Image (cartoon, one colour):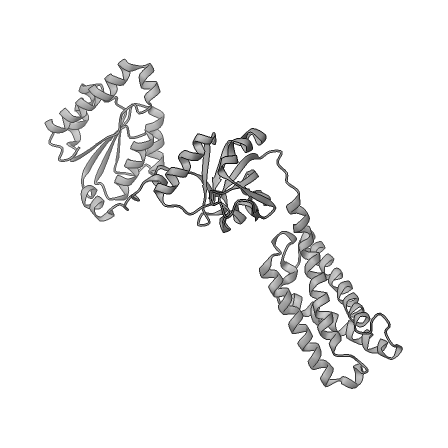
Length: 393
């Protein structure tokens, strides 16, 4: 398999580096074994063992796919594989030594263990060095400051995510409400008390808090209110269960509920919708469009989409694949006569009324239109549903 230029250059760098370190580690092992003065008769064994051990190590590094690991992904798992490679290389060389002892002798066997330890430290150190230096560089130019709440195992993932730039914030500090943790270190941050948050905000301008704690809804609500009172207006949760791009999310109302919302009874919904004529007002709106999709999903016989916006009506028809069951009616619910024509033509069995102005400030600016649409429009839908025998509204 051919390697791309970047992969090849990384492979070549590590390969040449490993060869050099493997030879060097054998030499250092001999120096340590003989307190810095290697007798002349041992130079032959040193040369043979250096070449043999180097070849064996390179084979096991390749076999365990250590050369496929980039700098930034070298971690505990890869270090463990590197350790296994050195153990297997030492055992393999030991077997080779016993099979051909006359070739290597005189040779001190303790060199095998010393070499394995030195080689593991140096080769592992080279691979982790770039990560160590990169972790010290905090590029905060384009990221927002934040305060991490909670000194837990999650906190290490949060800080790692910020270093690897899939969390677009940089930490100005870690706080925790537990007195026994205040003053301890979380990575290179001293854990501070929550009472210090106002000063941290003043020093850094942070407006965001990322909660790295597992809390019950009532505990989360209490912490949320406390952080908001300190002046942190953007409060987020960290979850290990989400994918990388969604690990940090806003606190939702469901997070603060004492009772979690129940899953929908899809069988009951299907029985309610299947093989029925369904009319949806406001069919192109954010709520109405989703209702239309679900009605088609659960087997509506015919779906009458009532929407006063041409573009929204076009969009929901396209979003549902211009389903043959769709009936598109560009009508405003305040116009009773036009709406009645639709009811008279289709006699819907289920009516879902989603044609309402829902943005409160806009309704306050336009009260007459809000009343006309939300009150009169709703009355028209109810009256016509009763008149034409709709079973459910």
